[in-house]
Image 1 (cartoon, rainbow, N blue to C red):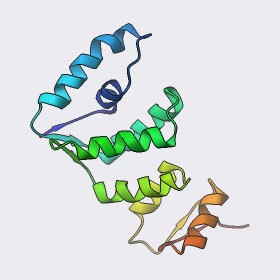
Image 2: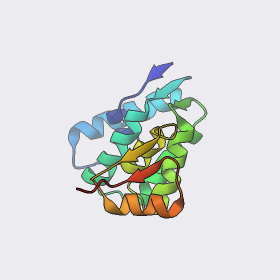
Image 3: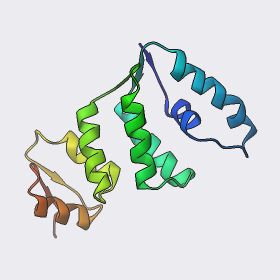
Image 4: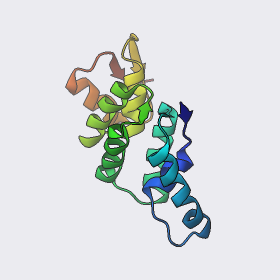
Length: 139
């Protein structure tokens, strides 16, 4: 099994005709994914891929979800902690930041989850009854 880095996936999913290096690398990335028998995508690569697609290429939430679902459906690709990613994707589809959802999903067996980052995240989690409880510490 061969691991994939974020740049391979970005080249596979994004056609960037303005970048000559990307134009050379895209066919290679497509060949790797199409012809390899067993590929592995670390959870951290999925997290970074979401950030790159959103921040650098302007993908919206639904675009990233389609990319992630396509990737997970490829028969030669294994994604680390795929159930955790699927849970985070479903919450991302409901409006939650993907990284926040993924961080929380990693803590499912802990006593709680503290965040200062986004009060909406804590509010949404409390309203949804997620366990462990997401808390925004006060002074």
